[in-house]
Image 1 (cartoon, protein in one colour):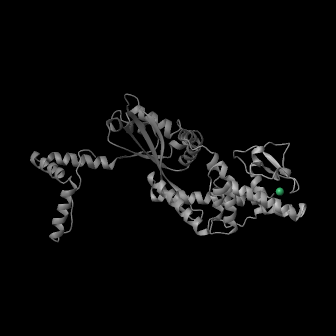
Image 2: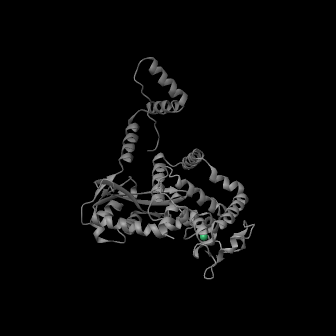
Image 3: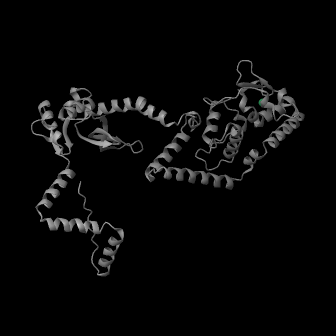
Length: 408
Ligand SMILES: [Zn+2]
C-alpha cells in the first residue's frame, strides 16, 4: 500500500458527510478522479490503491457489523480479524493485506481485490464477488445513487456548494477581499502535498472558547515575540488612547514602524507601514499620567527593555489633560525619562475639532443657531435629495452640506 496513493485520495476528498457515507464518499471521489475532472489536482487514482490508511479519524473496530451486507456469508471467508489491532482487518485473498476495518467494503470494491480474486481464487470466485457487491449496492440503495451522477450533475452540485460557501461568508459580514483570501487559502491547503488536505476540519474543534484560548496561549506569545524583535530592530512611534467599552475603561497602545514585506511569488521586497496593537489594559477608577507611563513601560518597553526604549521616536495622543499637562502630563514624564528627543503629535483630528469649536465660539449666537438649524434640516435624506434635484435642475455643480457634529 503506497502512502502516496492515500495522499491522492485525500486531495480529491470533498464530501465529508457522516461516518456512514464515508465509504461512498471515497468511492465517488474515486470516480471523479478517474474521470480526471477539472478538479484542482486531477490526479488519477487507481481503485486498487483506495484502501487507504488514515490518521486521526474516528476509527471503527472490527465487528460483525462489517458483514451486514454479506447475505451469502462470502465476505467473512476472506476478511479476517487482525489479532494485533481491533481497528484493522486482513484480506486473505490479497495476500493478507492489512487495513482499517472501516475500509473493508471499499477494499472489496477495489480493482486490486478483484484482480487478486481472479488470480488467487479463479474466475468462479468473481461471480461470488459480484453477488456480494450487488447486495452491498442494493443495501445502500439511495446512497449508492451518488456514484451514478453524471459529470454535469456533480458540477452543478459543486457550484451549489460554492455558492453556499460564499453566501455563508457574506452572511458573516466578511468583506469580498476576506472571502477571496479565505477561499484561496483553503484551496492552497487542500492541494498542499502533505496528504492531509482539509481533513483536519473533521476532527479539530471549532469551538469559540477553544479558538480564543488558542489565540491567547499559542499565537499571542509568538506574535508578541515577533513584535518585540521588530521594535528592537526598527525606530518606531506609538499612540495611546483610552475609551469606555461596555462599561469598562480600557487603554490601548498601538505601535507604528516601517517593515519590509517579502513577496514569495515575485521575490520582491517592499517597504510597508506596520500598525499593530501591542497591548490593551484595563484602567481603574482613576488614571493619571503615571498610570499611562506605567502602561507604556509594561506594554511597549516589555518592562524597560533598553534596546526598544532607544528606538522610540515619537507618540501621538489626544489632548487629554493627563497626557498634555505641563507639570505632570505624560509627555513631560516621558521626556524626563528618555535620553532621545521624542516627537509628540497631538491627534490632528482632535486639534482641528478644537480649532473649529473655538472659531465657532467667535460667531454671534444667532449665526451658530442658524448653522445648527441648517444642519438639522438637512439630516433628512429626502431634503438632501430635494437639494440635489434643485441644483441639478439649475445646472449647478452639486454641493451638499457637510455633516456638522458637536464632538469630533
Ligand atoms: Zn482483498
